[in-house]
Length: 178
Image (cartoon, rainbow, N blue to C red; front, top):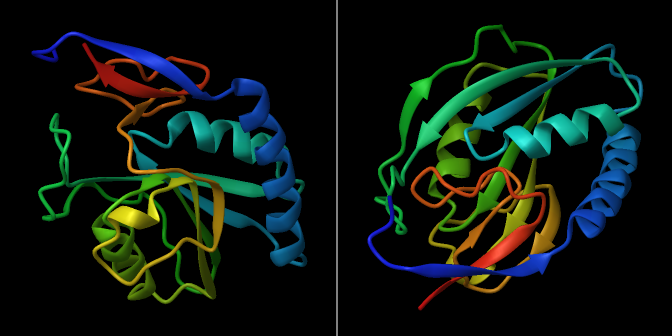
């Protein structure tokens, strides 16, 4: 539980998120046209809401798998040390793979995960992030698709948490300490 009192100011509405996901799904469908079955890999825990909405909009067969990586724990700042807590269940060699991330901040997690998965020889490996904070980037990485670029604010909602709270908000909100 957070030590300080805070409020959440709405930043991106549920309606705006839904419209963006619809547009992104069309782009992804075009990019992976002809794929027999797209393997969609969600990075837990923050991407679970995003991946659920995204795969329902992608108009092609998909297989969903999850990988849990962490560099935050319950902290507000990245430790920059990425740990894999849960690996994929299926094989991705020779398959088209889309990695779904909730937010790219420092970039360490996405860079680590893409490197790990690339070593497994997928046919194609692409990534999508709901949120991107380029001002915080410490690595040379950018998702292939980005839902929204945001400023350096601490955000919650739509699967993203603060000390395991606020994941269930249907929108993205900015945390403001009072």
